[in-house]
Length: 117
Image 1 (tube, rainbow, N blue to C red):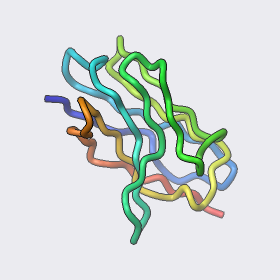
Image 2 (image 1 turned 120 degrees about the horizontal axis):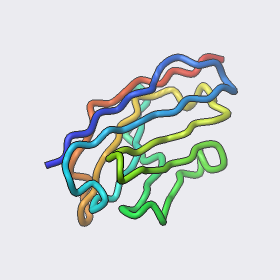
Image 3 (image 1 turned 90 degrees about the vertical axis):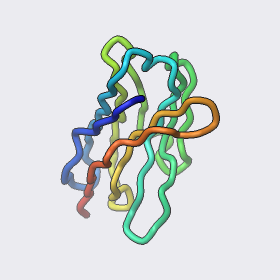
């Protein structure tokens, strides 16, 4: 069982930066692949970025490539999303998720990120 709690969201102007954090419970955090998803109003939840258990492999959606950076600190049971050059279209509720096998089994409650133009 893994419990995930996001923090760091808020309101920022276009072009600004935010860092999202995801704190995880449990002693086996490094066994889970992790990801950030986001869901804008009226849209489906989409993957933003993923990171392997060791942190050695990452993936980014084309829409955030070059602007966002995903990272994790297994010693602190934490994952991060550094978001730079934010755009209004980045406005969404952001979720962290933990994967074991082929499914994202555990989800945080979500945190709002709003980018004003």
